[in-house]
Length: 435
Image 1 (cartoon, helix red, strand yellow):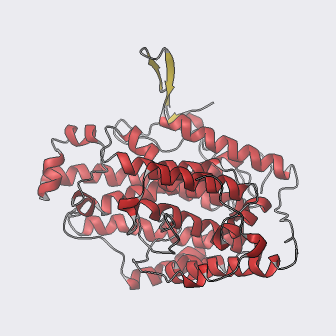
Image 2 (image 1 turned 60 degrees about the vertical axis):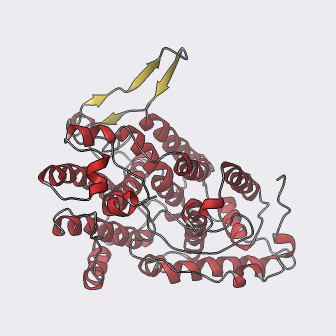
């Protein structure tokens, strides 16, 4: 799978872990000794593991899926409305597009936030419950998540230090869970991972959402979802993305690829917004901010895919829309041959254009976030977007040359990201509740 790799921890059976790359733009592969994680007696923190309205817009005929639903950050009249509900004669049912499936999740999460906070609009995290022996272990769990984030996502970690302690710890917990989940199908034990193992991982997720964590890192996430209005569906959808990687290595259309990108990366944005919060001064709709977070995840994953074409091809995988390849006069054979031709350059230009369109959509929402949360998101966005520039600088040779952003450019991006994080939210739309 074309995602940023990082090792986090190793647990018996299936807990070898890795994440999507939305929260970490720049890190490399490393191993992490799990002894610090599993050497503790977790006591009561450890529970026994059981059982072994939708719309979207088209900016042009060749660049689609700028966003799902009304962004709220642009006038609806700017884009033509495209209806994409397909009849399924064989089943006698109506099949909905990937956009509707994803936007249903966006609406559900936004609705949950509104119900949680009503008109107050500010995070009021519940205090830790100081049961005997539990609070110190819970603090240790969060500290461990912070150590993982600091070691493997240094730029993002630096940005999280600007957040309130509650938000900071919560985003660390989500970060670590995403890495562990993604590593299931891309880690050293990936060949032993089966659909049944992923079913067990999903059952474990349901347990921790019910307040029954299995281990220390689960405990941190379990506490987080108890405090913040985070819906379980994006987490389940990320696991579904892992299932997809076990059985699928080709995508017929961008609609199929879009859903995959949502599963493995867009989900992270939706998970994170309730933690990062929306500025109380923002007048954008809650749904529009979630939509922008989704767009950032899609943009990052498309960038991963374009950067890693050669690496994925070496494993027999092609994460590019088959119909668009054919329209460009290309096929899988051309990718496996690894030759940069004019056809390939033109194809890559259209794919990069699409990815940048998603970044553009994401930028509109970052400004609407809580002020203390904007810097790490801006840093991630700017650093990842520069990978597309590097692909162009390499003359679109993503077969044998890996596009990466050098340390100097990374360093220069940080003050730019900080300056952008200081820009106040827009005040164009009617006021709504904020979180």
